[in-house]
Structure formats: structure tokens, C-alpha cells
Length: 449
Image 1 (cartoon, one colour):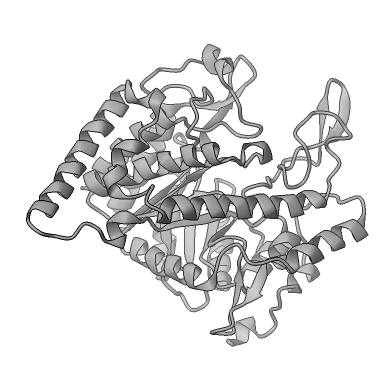
Image 2 (cartoon, one colour):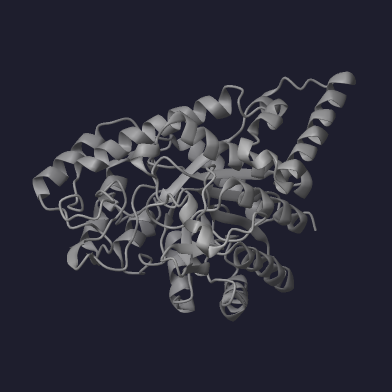
């Protein structure tokens, strides 16, 4: 163990200030819930985590590209096989587009099986003139805007664990049981997308992939192999509830190293990345790949110190910087950030979150994002990295496989007045499948350059 980790234990974060933690009403109930989780099996395994880290090392050098996507905040009620399948289908479609048209291996990383908690700007909010606790995700309380439903309940963490287990089971069945086989690329197209311009473009691409596989069969190349029959799929979420993360942190029996087995990759949010904070302290000691969200409020010197603390060995694949500046601000912040990180020689994966910096409230009162602004931030992200001779390594989306109307624009030109037609999210607005595919085709052109 290195000197920097000699003082670390999976409980040492408790000696630091932990922001964005719920106000649990009963400490005994909270402790009992975490004790229950600590005795349950891990959700992911150390070998899988090491596999993801090796792939991310390739993304840092431009040999692969990271596609990270899923719900803003997972909903307990939507933990069903059809819901999980529809979301997985969109990610598989996007990966097929990026891989075939972009000519680069794609790392698929879902915001799934644990994205049940959300940071909030305030502990409370005013609803109908009454002050109630803020909704912090289904793992903490209920979105129903009444005081009783908003009281944090630690048993929801136990339920979240079991639903994450169910999600992992479904994901492994789909990705390893033949559903994700390249021979089934046509089957991934969503019914409501098929008649859209992007759906038709996808069908054309699927036919090209099918013909390529047929040609391989004709000339005697075996296509009945794991690389074509299965898909590597990894999970991630924001490591927000540190008690939950601690309870799922286990020591690998083969190496003696510590891993947070709640997900393959964990990220630290823009609100919780304090150098002297509990989240940095906890995540510096687990060997998972770590993401770091960086918004306009960052201090470059502190970011450098955080990078050194989280990745003292400068290990490729260990650290991913997820920038979230917004289309209108990215040129004000990203070029300087990239230059400073490059100057220090830090090995990082650069990925763009084009969602959070482009959020606005429509006249209808719905929180939304505009497709064109999302696309513009992505374009700027690539152009800046090209100018700085650094690698644009991936994209981070909030999306769903459902036919929602939560983000405006796209091929269907959803307007602010149409958001109410099918606005389902309890938290932030997500791209629907049609909008997601449209972005995938655009990104494929960029990564193929």
C-alpha cells in the first residue's frame, strides 16, 4: 500500500465534512439498513472493474470512445424488464452507430443499477406555500410533494440495493444471452423511432452491418463468437450516499485491494468535489475508475490537487473528467482547463456532459433542454480538443428509451408548448430515443475525423 493510502479505510470519510447527505431522522434505523446492505453480495466484481479501467485507458489515448448514458435519477417504479430493455436498446443502437460509422471501439457505460440519489440545491422547498424536505431520489424519499412522503427513510436504500440487483440481472441476461448480438441489430430499433428520419437512417446502417456479417459467413469467417454474440456493458452512478457506498465496499480476495462494488465506475458531482470533503476522501481509496464532474464554478488549482489525490500514480483509465459548462460557456472555460491539465501531464479521459449546463425552465414551467444547444456543446467540445491536441474521449447523456417529450427540438421539433404531452421525469429532462440516435449520428462523424 502506498503512503497516500496508508491512512485510508473505508470508514475514514466519516472524519470529513460530507455534503448533500440526507437528514436521516433515526440513526439506529440508518445504521441497521447499512448493516443489512453490508452483508449482501456485491453488485459488481473486481475483475469487471479492472476490465473497465483498462478500456478507459484506451479512451484516454483515443483508441476507444466512451458512451455513458441513462436516467437522470432512476425511478423505483420503472425497474421493470421492459423499461430496462428499452433503455438498453437505445444505448446499444447508439453504440452500433458510433462503432460502425465512427470506426472506433465503444465502451458502453450505463447510468443504471444505482443512480437513485440526487444532490439538491436546498434541503427544503416550498410547495403550495408549505415548506417540505426536497426530493433526493427514490433511495432517500418519495417524489410526492407532501411532507410525510419526503421524510428520508433508510429502508429505501435497502430497497434500492435489491432493485439494483434486479437491474444487473436483466442487463447481464440481455447483454450476454444473445439479445445484444450484432445479428439482432435490427431488433433494437424502437417502434416509435422506425418511421422517423433517424430511425430510417439506423435501419440502413443495420442492413449494412447485416450484409457485412453475411459476407463474413460466406467466406468462412466464424461469426458465432463472443465478440459478436455478447456485449460488454458496465454501470455507473454518482457516489452520493456515502454510507451506502461504504456498505458495498469490499476487499478483493485475489489482490487485497478495495473496490466499491455498487458499480463499475463512480463519479463525484460538481457539488461534492471539495478537496477536504468526505467524497474525495472515500473515493481516493477504492480502485474503481472515478469520474469528476467539472462545471463553471471550478477552481483550476483545486482541480489539480483533486486529480493528484485521486490518482497519485497517474494511472491511465483511473480518472475521467466530465465537463458540464453549457453551449454558451464552454469556450470560456474548457480551453484553459484543457491546457492546464495537459501542461501537468495528467492522464485523464475527457468526456462531455452536454446536458446539465443547458437546462432552462420553459414558459410552461417544465425544466427542459434544447437539442440544438446540446449538439452545439458537443461540437465545441470536439473542436476545442482538436485545437489543443488532446483527445475527446466520450459523451455523458441523460436519456431514456421512452417516447417522452422532455427536451425540446430534434427531428420532431418538440416545442416548449408540447413538453406536457409526455413529460415523465421526476428530476431532470432526458433525451428520447429519437433525439439520442440523431446525436449519435452527429457524434459518429466527429469521432471518425
